[in-house]
Length: 188
Image (cartoon, rainbow, N blue to C red):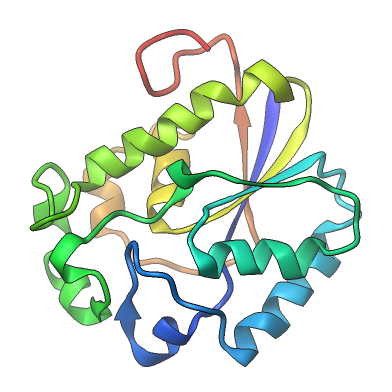
């Protein structure tokens, strides 16, 4: 078993402007940097063996600030990225929320579908047991990252996730059972 703790990246400049960054890099805002320090204070003594973060700047910066000088390894992984909204990267959040369900299976113009993004994160989950079995890991990511955890580990249909309102909280906890099929159809 692997204990997986998920935390969202801290508030970015795009978040404050009301833009959905997608695959665009956006730095943390001053408030986001403060929240990242708070994340580190909450999780440094939480038994975390490793931190995995999306390589998008806002997530990587969250991990760097939160776990600086702790000795806990911080590993960046592109598979934990947000959904690629293609031509709609950095479009207003309201625009994304109004038609998100349309892109569950249909890729965004020049980008990917939510199902493709969730499957990408699922391949990350499939790889975790090879090195982290019996450990507690923290994952810092985005909506697509959380949807993958909810879909594969809590068995929530993507359609339900697309319709649900997001409510921030101080982390979500999951258990990954390496003996169960996760994302790619093979036993991990």
